[in-house]
Length: 314
Image: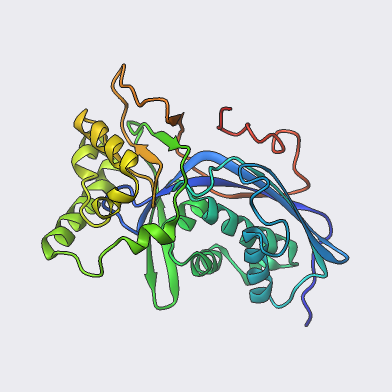
């Protein structure tokens, strides 16, 4: 039976994310209350994409846009492609900064395509959507919190990615420090060695386990729980400003880590009063996003069309 599509537009709000959180390499992630809004509808022919806010003028506005590519992959999984697509993106998540902008685009595309297919959810539930999004992204640590919200633990089985979302303790206070410079996940991964010392792996396993407890029950343990020896030191030379800020914050007692592949820094505890991060960093104090990606019928409203709304200050 050919795929049938729903009439009218759908829209999705997807949160920024921070992955790794220090020792939880490729496994742990947080959803942050900073959002991209994306709307899409099936059209008679062709593909049009508009981008407002972050990435405007740089991102593709055709089939090469990551939202469209994720939609295409999802339509294939659901049995067929529509005649055409119109996509509108209002981006607030900084691009290539370690805040999950690509995962947000992928999750948006998967959920929009599912919503545009009649009975799409019946054929692609959230577990299957996570597997597909992780397959497109290459790993589940960012797509899991983007889709599910909260603090997530993700892993991969032979059948694909899986994840659970856990509530975050009230004493966790997040500050995101975003530099002007960009980073590339592929380059950051290329800096990692093929083999690490057994002692470093053992240390990270213990600290990652402790971090789950610290984030969900005992935030006072966040500083020791965020010690990492698997990836941050190896990447330090490629982003010295990030490494220096993480070191300064940790020296001041702040549970600071590299957000994802960087160069953004994430602080999981309060910054000391008067701590000076300098003028090269945009400071965002963001709560944890709890619900994760949200889909509704209709076009983007006035609030969604504002690129400085939804948690981001100009």
